[in-house]
Length: 144
Image (cartoon, rainbow, N blue to C red):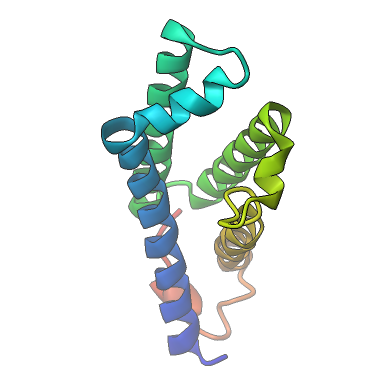
């Protein structure tokens, strides 16, 4: 892949992941917190704990999305994103395994999202190790 294409793909990955995190966080908090409450209620998590979980999860999503845009410690941000996705996936699996079979794929979509996060992580690892210096791509990657 040419340098310019790699840079565009990298930037598209950053912006799309950031959008995903911020958008889902805002939806969870402001437009559809009741969906989160319903899911948690099916696991007998209600009241203040459910409210805290929905709002904390939404806030965490927003923070991850904004963090990714800052280009500060991007590798750590990628690891945090993967940890959150794995946590959300495990929690949803314990609450209701049928989410794996849902036609809209609320859990199965996590697999390609993690792959995209890994692409961003690897681009930053390569940038730091100097492997991308021969292509010149490292000059245009955001700072870590």
